[in-house]
Length: 159
Image (cartoon, rainbow, N blue to C red; front, side, top):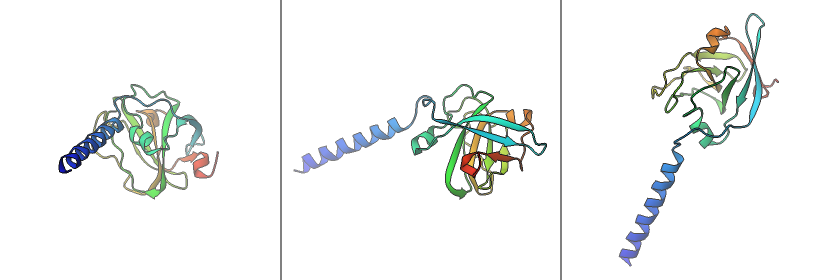
């Protein structure tokens, strides 16, 4: 009986380890559903992006991993259940990103420009935010998108 119990325990442990390994992505996830999002600058200029929406934990954990480019007019919008101080990283991300941290009011609270590919260093706005928008590295500077600009999307009561 003890041998059977040990054997069953070993099988369950192996199955759990295999499942844990398969949950760790080894390639980019398929394109996710998208929505339009607009950033309005202090100068009134509008910048429209088509953003993917990772909604499951697995989709959020994978994010932009393994993607070798982020087109200029696109991005990925991570929504959090409530405003909180989030920390992102660049694990398995081969291209730099601009991370735009957005408050519940749709106002940009912080921007991390040109994040370092593959870095495991946490990137945080240092204040509670409701969302993180990942864009092509360097695009916020190129488009003059700044802290204090407004994001218009249904997730922030607009759009």
